[in-house]
Length: 124
Figure 1 (cartoon, rainbow, N blue to C red):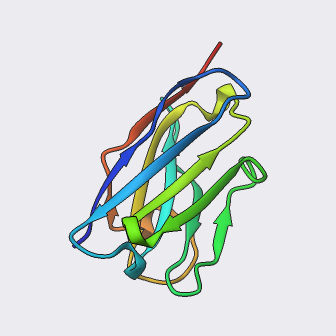
Figure 2: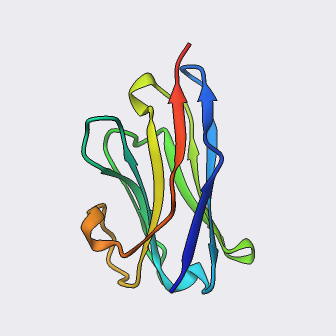
């Protein structure tokens, strides 16, 4: 089973950018569809973006479309989430997760392996 570790979170001002990394170990991430999710205090976990295995199509939530971009670096066994024009409502713990199915989805219950999360805070 793959192990996932997120990094890259932090405090950023509104309008700023961050790049989150999801590093895989144990197995190649190319075997999996990888999703990014976030959870703000008192709210349910929501899907942000995913990149499917194989054809590597991407699917991004409307709330971040045009601002967030997901990508893979297979040589580094890492999936990134580039976040631009950040807003206070993007503040949350961000998680990456993996599922073996190639179906593109932002449904958290479909993902079996999860990282520990990284905090993103957008505030002036």
